[in-house]
Length: 90
Image (cartoon, rainbow, N blue to C red; front, side):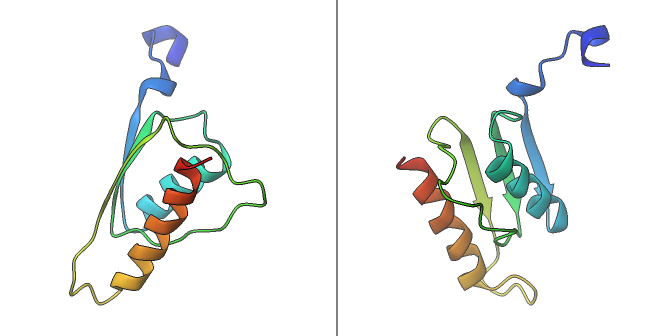
């Protein structure tokens, strides 16, 4: 399909909400070359990849969450932020 439309998935910024954001975050952590970046709404740490962590310093990632979210706590969002911060410093 991507060849037919001349679409480069590696130039895509994926957008995900809740479980979709967790899936997008997982893909970035496990297969860093698939997307250029991600916009993640109400995401939490989906997994912690094996060492070494991937180098995501070239990726653009936006995390968004509410302070009063009953499902994803501030701590969950901060944990994901901290994980992404570690991958940006490699």
